Length: 571
Image (cartoon, rainbow, N blue to C red; front, top):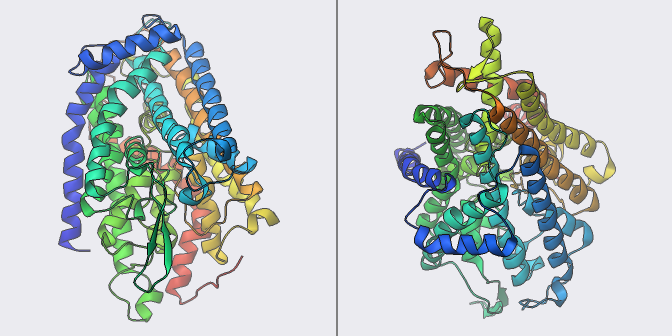
């Protein structure tokens, strides 16, 4: 570990923190329906959309209606994207003449992008047309991100309101998230990326002759516009197969830094929105502090592990750290930081191959996802995922003192705890259940490129990434098969909707409750004790649930490597 590396990490954290309050204030005004600097430009467009679609912006929804709207929105999005992928061979803007996407891959990709997972069992530049990338994937990158933000705002209203039967209008929330938050940032962001050297063209792929005289086809396309929203919306799906390690998706050190900031900025700022809307900004800072503790711990372990390399590398005299699978233009520090950010934020973009990390360095991205998309998390999903753990932590605190648990003046009762546990438990069911099946059936065992614990980690990482709606991959798993396309798609859908639905049920239940005034016995939820309790609950739940699987994968791989044992490549 170097001083330069720690300066990069510290600068990154400082920039993200500096953006939390201004962006949080802006988004609070947006979702409260207040006037903003962009209102003169965007408000007429917003009203026009409501008129065309027949939406009454003043009509709010019960949580059941809000949930129904969310599900209907995703069903329609799935149908549109599936049709585009299956018909891309006969649709325009296909200069490379890409064939129609196979049914199982189209199913997997559609499920992936509507759930904000963006898992890719294909190489983008060799599989998809420009139209499929723009109208299909980029379009869903905006809408899946906006949906996550909308659900988070609905849950915030549940805590902020009292004795009401509504939690807002999904159609209004998703429209405002897109028009006022995502688009205004993505437009200048795209121009910045073009300035940095990222392609943005509808022209055909470029044929070039190398210095040795060989012919090479260089894939280009409308890259910058997709990368902007893939990062800002924590989508992660790359235009190119190599994702953010590709020089056309991540041309410079500056573009790499800005992309890392954009992955965290909305998720971090939503904690400030939470504090403002419930009337106490300290509550938002407490949640962000808990996220920050887990994030910094992950950065330290990953950076340390990759800097120290492994005993096998060191035995060959390679003592400069583990550079396998990393871009030399980014180095170990920026690669380790990016890996932790992208899995903490449920983004899934990668600028290094996690399959090539050391056993312990690769374990941290796994843990980040297994904890449930709550360390900043996907836009919106991170906040409502963390608030689920807040409910559990408050319940535990109530048990310890023999008092009915309360949070922000709302009694946390059986319904809220049951819904919270449903949202928590559905993830390990998909992560561990899918892994268990894949490790005992021939179709699953045909996927990993490595034997032994590393091969197990490749499978575990895939199902963890799917259920956590992250989308990153270890890289050593051949996942474009009927078995993996189908089972991973199921994991993505369950991981998204079996969390969203309980969250909205909690929002409706809390909004209907009366607010209880604080008293001498009220547990303060903005100080260090609460932050420690919350972090402890998260780690205990994660440790009890996932430690056995980690012991079979990265932990035993690390111990075996320390003893000089390696595992041959093979299925």
